[in-house]
Image (tube, rainbow, N blue to C red; front, top):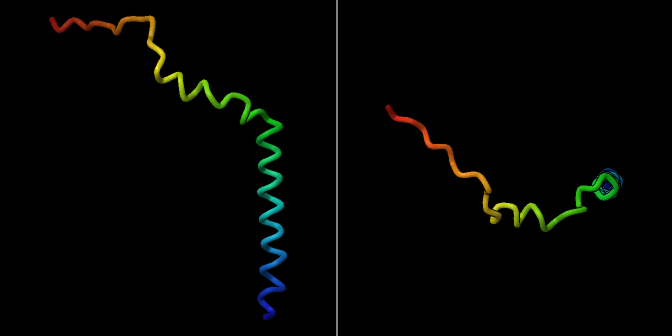
Length: 55
């Protein structure tokens, strides 16, 4: 039973750290653009690949 006196404050500290990290990530712009990175892989490159000389 006495372990609860340790675990409950520890859980609250971890929860507080997770909430702080979430709000820090939101304020620093981590969630501004969620669509472009997923679509960037599908966009074609304008440049042709370099052809090396095997001679």
